[in-house]
Length: 127
Image: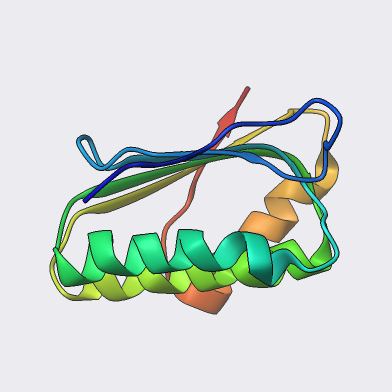
């Protein structure tokens, strides 16, 4: 299986940088995510996670370093977390770290909502 890498583009700040490393299982999303048709961007990420985390049963560490994401992106992030929860329920090791700016009051609430929706523990870590 190959790693999934999508580099950020300076003239298109709507898409996050993606580095899903097939060798280490460390998956990172960084930047901002507020594209209109978010599913087009996130579908390859979801498919990669399904194959890597569920089909292959590998250990996954997901590091989310998003400074902003819209509602469409939020729904797809929830789908990612659901995939990881299924992998965890199947006995695989899964760690989710959410990095945030300490002066952003909304992030903690959003992460708590994700935890409630998925039943997955998310580690909040200040940047």
